[in-house]
Length: 441
Image (tube, rainbow, N blue to C red; front, side, top):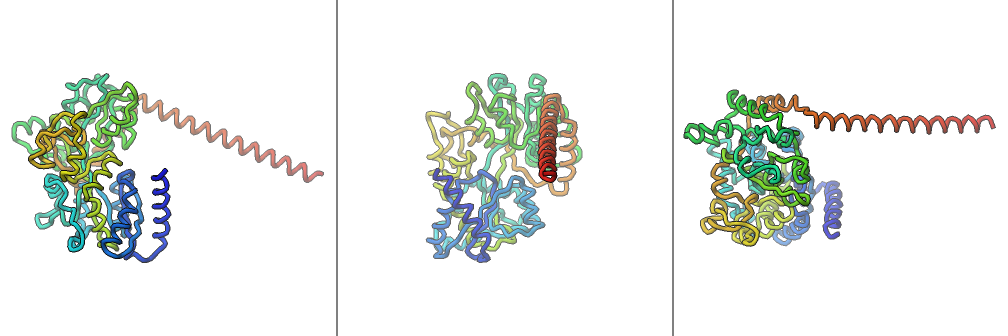
């Protein structure tokens, strides 16, 4: 009930702020849906006024697709003050000059929390710099991160059967696999499968391979995905985790955050597990940036700094199920659970003292896993070729289950429309008769 009133308050404040022209005291935040503890919004407004002596009201809006958000800013020149795009979109925005630096002048008056980010995260994020002269940390602060892997139903799938991405080719799983409808993520993991022998022979580098969208590499990935199609029940944007946790399908190529959600929400009798296959994967990251058309850089910078506080990072993780980029001792202590998890090496993220800590392996993979993870780069001028390949792979994906489902839905819709039309026609005829009767009286 408390959260309900908070959400209503935020919506009312958003509508009120939108009608104002005082942008100096308004902060427009654009974020993914369900990606923050909303109770932090009024808390930030109080924090900002206490730190600066100035009031601020947040307009909080959400988006569901990176590219749509980017179009609003690049083409529409929307004046969002702080947004949360994914790694490859941050790279594209940097390349196009769509970002401005985070203002760190606040360190003179308040605690600078930007240093709480994991050094490993900073190193990975620097990979998306469009040039050696651009320091990504000046323009972007990582927020959440995770991996891409396979979640599977242990009743039907053994651990050994999912140690490789080749699991999607196994005829045993015909019609039992959902693949995330995210061409950039899928490409980056399947190219590592297709070229695995070259990787282990030392003739190819994972990061270079995942960033190389040559015709030859696109064909190699397309060949694997076409061979996997008999096993694929569908390409999903968000519903795959639901089907897996209900026991409707056995395998889902998905993100670690969705996998953890499915594990937590699995129906009774459905035991799920998540694995990052041996060939390699990608470590995706979303981060906060300030677009070039922002009107309140000061408040945006304070907001980013506020979210980097340890206690706020923990709250956001607990609320969303995703993993924060913050790597302070307080966050580590809050995530350790010796009763629930076996020890793993998280020294890459938290430092040397975390080489054997009991953490959730879905959220914090062992160092042996992250050592074979790359960071997804922007496809640049090869984006169209990648999308065309993806469209060819998906184009004929209408197995009998999906076709039957579509026919049932369309038939039901048609019946509904016909019945509705008949009811409207009958009401019209009855009304017409009543009017005629009244006319003759």
